[in-house]
Image 1 (spheres, rainbow, N blue to C red):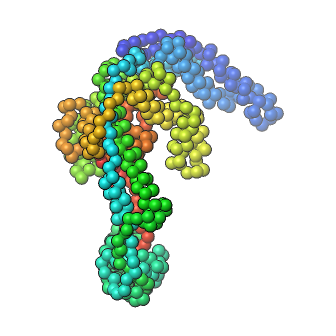
Image 2 (tube, rainbow, N blue to C red):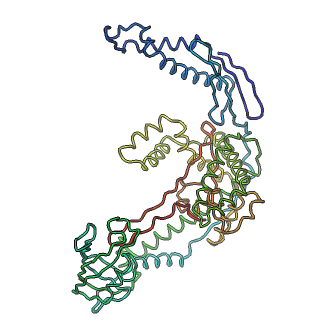
Image 3 (cartoon, rainbow, N blue to C red):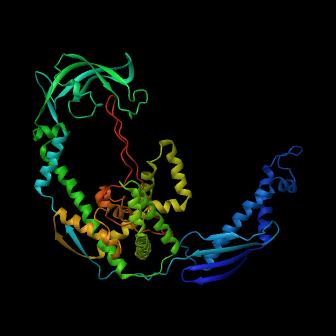
Length: 525
């Protein structure tokens, strides 16, 4: 095999590779000998089909497989012999006019990863913004839960707005009961707006033991086509009328929630609040860290990696824009700053390569047990019967494994750097911490891009939101949306963790009114 370098400019490399015809032919002949014993043909005993007939029957397919395998081996040899570190998969083209019996001439072009000097970790200084959890915040959280756990007590007399009635109902269309239109001892709060329009209003004044027939028309966009826009009747039997009662915040209230005491409830809520603020604190520290690394390092990055990162940013931005009130205006706004987002993509790739270099230089690793956990978590999105196939797919595809591994690896490198840094603490309020994060998020964009209007959460969302879904702290999307996630390359190659957004549907029991589908949009900053 002959390899000739034709381009060596910056991070770009190009080669011509010539694979002798005899190399390909030898592989073809070897494959024919291997499969011949399994070939069956009328007139021949099993395993006795002549090689020339096997070649005549399957030669084309065997040759194609042999050619592909030989090309893969040639690429492996090229990378090894020239000590290349490809940034992305090489672009390989077979010369025109190739046919069996001739040498295979390949043109290969690729970009390589830059050589990055292991950065010094001295001089890293971070400020840890700490938010103490105040008692009034815990009290507010308890009261919020209490307000969501509305209690009702039986009352005499007629039902009023805000009262709860326990009813049986039977829905009929043209005098015939329809499916899903019947329930027994169903609780209904008059005025809550959970049932179709006109249903609750006609129960005002009803008393325990009273029977009543009401007439309602289903909405035109109701999910059940046979009921949409149709006038129906409901036979009602009221069993009980209840009035709202004050929820006393005491041990009994906590026990209704399955806890032992109010003190335990307060402790759990305080822990949750501390976890949330700890996540915000880490977000702010990580942003400071990335800004320092970006300011202290400037090196060429592979254009193909930048373009891949930019494509993901742009896809997210355009998705967000399409869900704005004025999609055309939102698209025009981001289009005007397209170059700025390309600079963000370049920054992310550079940071990703730098973090990878730091991690490898300091033996940061994702353990086999951690990797197994990542795969198991990812498999949960599939049906139980498909999960084993997913496990096998990850085992067989290094790129998929790298994509799963990348976010956790990055987190571990960041944690390693935070431990090495000189960290000072400052106590702030939650609002001050949130403001600091939002200010840093603006810093993700070049200075000339800061002229965007304040309403443009759109710009912040997609450009800054490829961050730590693996982090417990980032589970709250308000925090996660503020961070930035650079990429990391498999065998030093960038593998971005892709975020997917899904619209949530809400289905209420008939005859509850139809809930509109929630917009598939990213959570706002």
